[in-house]
Amino acid sequence: MDQQLLLFEVHNPKEKRGRRHIIKSFSVKAHANPRLCPVKTFLTMNSQRPQSSVASLFLHSLQPHKELSTRTIQSWISKLIKLSTTEKRVSLRSV
Image (tube, rainbow, N blue to C red):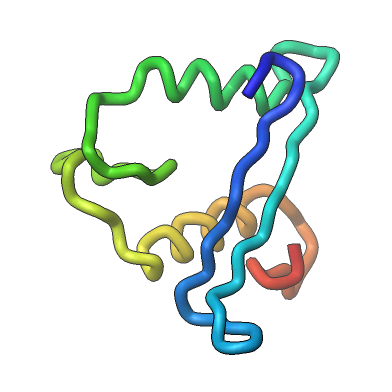
């Protein structure tokens, strides 16, 4: 990972293709404006997060060593999507 590109994988434990779990690879490019840059935001957040044995982007704020459920993360993202747009009927799957 460098300052211009963030690479990550999303592992979907519920979906399978050919009896294998689906793993999707993503890359996010840095934005010219540091205040809008998702790469800089992630690097800053990652450097300030508490130490944890959990290898997940999202941590339980009160118990950082406890993994969050997929349902909890899904509800957080859904709420964020609803707050970030005025469009009706936008869902996590449509993004």
